[in-house]
Length: 288
Image (tube, rainbow, N blue to C red):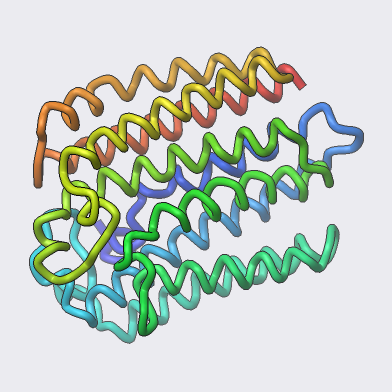
């Protein structure tokens, strides 16, 4: 596989696709949805996710926190690319997100520029800068806010120019699913993160509570899909089918899988995220 594709970490991209799909679906049934805006919204979301991945690769690599790693290969730590090249890749991805966001702001509201700047700063600050908040156990907060609430309600707004209760519920569901992906990643890395002083939430609360937190996030996503169905979009309930994909992942996590045994769980969680989000979005669009 191409080294830059490895660095982009394709398994994490459902975290960018799902909120846009849910947000656009939430806009269905509105007065005058403008569907072409979904494309640049997806570009923004995907570019931010790729940018975050490259930025984390760069920042963790120069700090030396990836020298002993269980998970997927990192470009800087493995020597596949120089820190400078990976940093440029991160900035290029953020630049793509900025251009697409600028186009959306021009046809909706210039306030989107402030949201975009906040998202890029938060993406860089996760592992970059003098006090990276990902090292302080706040990563899940960023993921829930930006890859859940902001990405979903932002997509709903640019497509339908309104944000409703359904949009907020969908944003919370997307946030829970995205956090589940981060939590299982950090669960796998507890021993190595603790050793290098990276105090993720998983390191702070410990192994067993992290496993139950993972289950709680998937359960919350399920309840939120049900809430969307009850409030306004009954067909959103088909998203519950996606939760079935989670059963082997939950079994592995609660069964005590560690280290390399959690790598397949990361892939399964991405599939849960994609299946639940896309099916729920389809149901929401049909109901709308």
